[in-house]
Image (cartoon, rainbow, N blue to C red; front, side):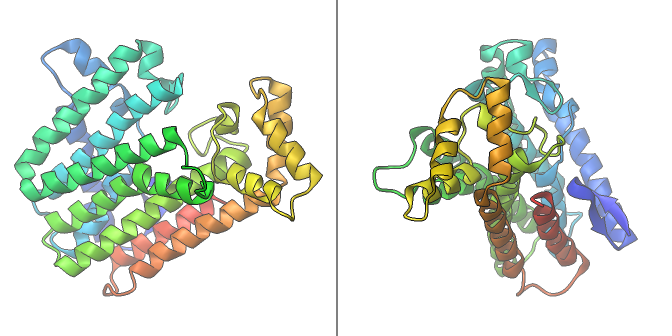
Length: 337
């Protein structure tokens, strides 16, 4: 048994491992090449997060999905580069919106330079991704454009909040499907499509990616509360401190507003609604939420989406790539505890 990719994904076949590792290495080279500019400062800012590393979760999915066709087809690696460039571009923009200081263990671009540089660098990466897409054909361009529309729509919906009368949890899950699920789905779709897999297989892997992407983000929500380490890539309780209502908080609020809500539920909601920049209040809120049933409820939701992703794969023939994709479902659940 060997290990590749994020979460220590286990691969039980040397040939599959070699293909995946070679593909990911080619993606790294492609990312560095795609982020070069004749202007040295643009190269520096564009490669800032590339060189900081990352899970390369989406390129890994491209590589595994490609094993349902010809994994060595010429469009596979470029499509993985496109998906990761798009993801990186969104991180530059997210850090500006969130006023983040750190990303992947290094200073965020907006902290190192300023917001304008971060936004424009994100735009530069989108432009480079679009340039590469043009070489992959009009269908790839359309797929990416639709996913990007969903991604931006998800971000706008998060900013706007739910409409009056809309269940905040349903709204939040729609936001995650757009912000995270859409691009993970594209990773699976392009990997399968570029490898020449049949249409049914492409559709199955696309659905798998959408559900896995949502489960992946829900696991991050749980980790932000439950982890004492930096597994999520952020200091635990970061979302709480920033006032971001992730799924555990939304479950708490729903419980507090229901007939089953207790005084303790409502008191914790009040604490979370207050100023959590104070370290003592933040520590108290984090400890109380860790012990609250809302966190376990969010874990169950994570498991549900991961199991839906696994079930989606059922019609595909048994193979090592399918087993690896199923293992990713286990790995996402494991991250959530």
